[in-house]
Structure formats: structure tokens, C-alpha cells
Image 1: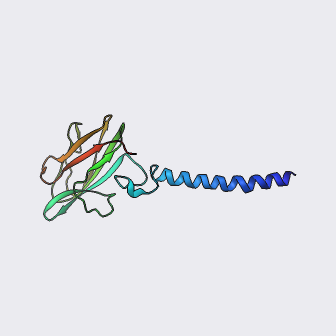
Image 2: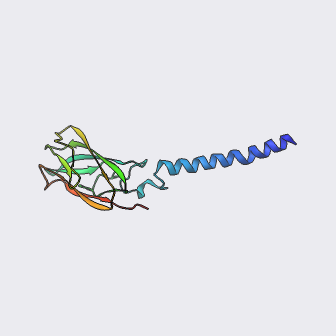
Image 3: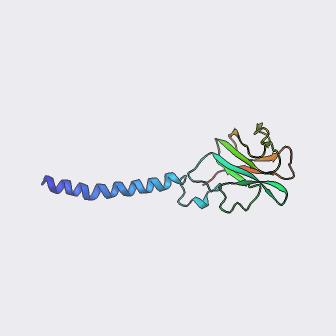
Length: 151
């Protein structure tokens, strides 16, 4: 009798536990989304840090999202959810020094010389669209950061 009970528990509980663990692992590693390509910043796992790189394209420096699959879209629109701290880590692989600022937040990287990596961080608690730009070359690097509900 005890052997049948133990066998029944083993046959039922172990596969159920493995299945639940697999589902939790998939959802946990993608920020609750089944497919990482539906996430705006295309980074897995979910994070409040977006890694960016400045590259020189046709003689002008442009900002690219490292998580972008093709790295084909310069000066990307970045998305984040409400009530978080957002950290932008920027590596300058371009030709010019840039100071990246997020207008209205006071956040700034300070000067980033070619070959350097610097970060800026800011907090927000309202849905909004913020502007980022290069102080030295706003004609080359400028764009939006959208704070919105991601569902």
C-alpha cells in the first residue's frame, strides 16, 4: 500500500514540478513575455539598463541600441515602464566626444571620449516622452525615451 502511494506521488508530482519549473524559467528569463523579440529594447532578461553604442556612419556619429538585432536603426526610440530607475550605458565607438543628456531630468553622462564607456541614470514616476541628445552634436544624436505602460 505504501509503495503504491509513493509511486503515485512520484509519477504525478515530479513531472508536474518539472513542468512548472520550466514555465517559470521561460517567463522569468524574458520579463514575462514568451518571445524576447516582442520586448521594445530586445534585451533578455528584463532589465532597467539599456546598453548603447555610438558608431560613426557615413561621417556622422549615431547612437545605436546594442540589443537591436540588426543594429540598423540609429538614434533609437527607447521604451521603459513606469516607476523605475532607467540606466543608459553608452560606449563611444565614434569619432567625436559626446555628452549625452536626458532633457528635463538633469541626467548627463559627462563627456564621453572615443573609446570610453559611461552611464547615466534617472528615475521617473509618470508616463511621458523624454528627449535625449548629444550636447556637442545634437544634429547627429537626438531621440526619444518613451515611458509607457508595457502590457
